[in-house]
View 1: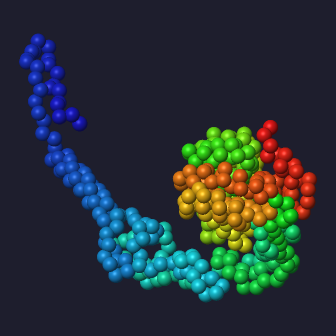
View 2: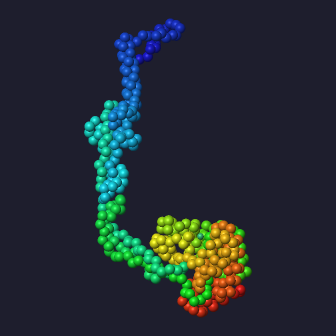
View 3: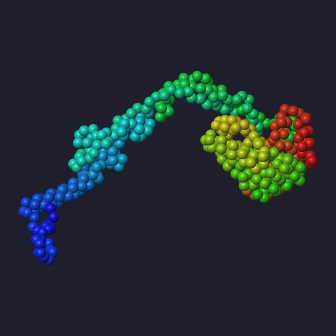
Length: 412
Ligand SMILES: [Zn+2]
């Protein structure tokens, strides 16, 4: 119904100013309208109150502590916020120790005295309590495992060879699936120990091998090479992989001048103090560095400090390495003077000796200066200088290899 009512139509010849006037609606209509307005206000206010109530944080009690959580939060939200005091149970190993902390049953959550479902919604006044989860024993598994073989080192001498290869054994074990603690085992095959025989070059031929460790070293390796060339001596260089990477040019010069390349490991660590994986890195790293710098693959290796134990023997052997130690220590690292170094070497050398000297690791001027004295004095005694490889090849043969070795030492 419109508030504006048209006036009654005019009769013939009548005229008036056209206007409208306000017509008050009837009382019934006005009451209805007011009631409608009140209803709308009430609905809007109710909706506002309801949404306020819904959005208001909920106060609950968790393990005796009052906490506010957002409206709509569920039990799982409390778990992920780590507000419960009790933890999961542990996974218990076969020997009763803890195989994995928290690896047992999860903590139990009670909501108002009843086990709570993680998806349950939290309401004001809820009381939640956590109880530690149960411990769970680990399961057992049956598996075949290798039995490591031992390496037996027999005899004495600077050189070594494998006289019997080792072979791992096999056992069937029952063990904890997580702890790997063995509860029962049956040997299926016994391991076969490896036997390494150490030996010295056969005496009888006056062969001697000069060996230089810890290089290449800037300045000193070149000095040693110069003296070896002047004295016409072929030697063996036990190189450190780390140094080889820094000074590959010196490595190529050593090869070019007819000396034998050998490895002294990558980083000069005690093989007897590091684990098998680290020994493997030292052995392979040293050999690879030499290969990269010079193209030469060498299996000769001298462990730093001569330190070997059972594990070191196994790793070196498995990589095909041939261990070379020494029987004459020149003592050059003490820097006692070139004459003393030379006299020590000459005094202790016997046919087949391997002499330990150094071209790296510090100032080696005295070592270089000792070379011509050693060469002169040992030659005067009838010795021939050879590389370690020539020395090993000459073992047990009385004449030909010595002649070959001697020939190898003549200028080309
Ligand atoms: Zn060394």
